[in-house]
Length: 74
Image 1: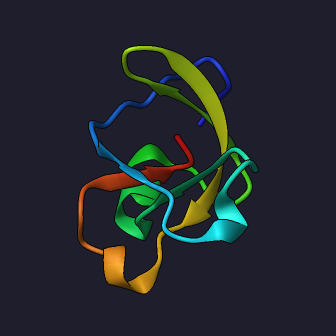
Image 2: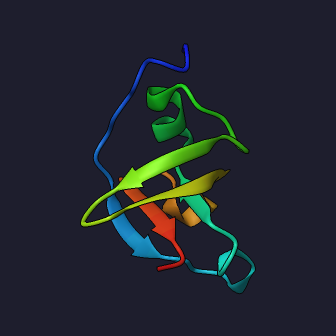
């Protein structure tokens, strides 16, 4: 995907589950969501809701696979 193309999906925001993600601007999303967005671990994404922020993509935890959520640290 070129830098000018913008892919979007809707995910429900959930709190970070593990302390290791807190304060590190990590976004945990499923492999399926990464595939749809054509992104990979380590990419930086813009997350837009009531406000915008950026985060580093990491794979969701096994228990979150298949759920349409993005885990952020608040």
